[in-house]
Image (cartoon, rainbow, N blue to C red; front, top):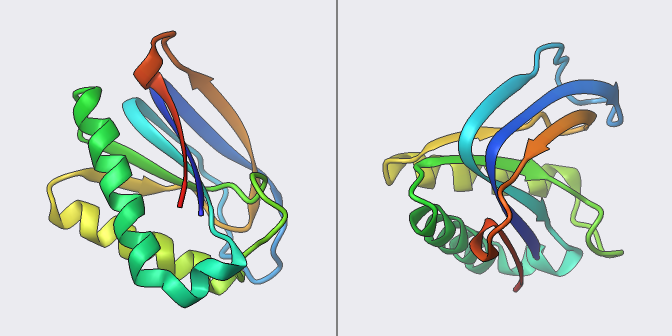
Length: 136
């Protein structure tokens, strides 16, 4: 798994182009303030270690949220960090499981729509713990 986390003072998205035919129809976007945005790239080898990568994903997101004093997390599937890609149904389940576990731990968690190219707006402050990349 590749994980790029950005602390965003503001993050917004709007669906632009549907890229996966079976994806749910989504027309509305959303906006968040003071959020950790996880750009998550699940790789093919993650399928065999789903439990481990889910736990590492959650630990990393919670850690950075704590360092930045926020309880808001946005999960964004971002299949552009590696050539290896996990199947879309695996990614959907991974994100749903991570969202549930984070919500159960007291975080406000949202997901960007899977299967869409999105128009993104991102405003991030310039300090070291505003951007963190992890591979696991």
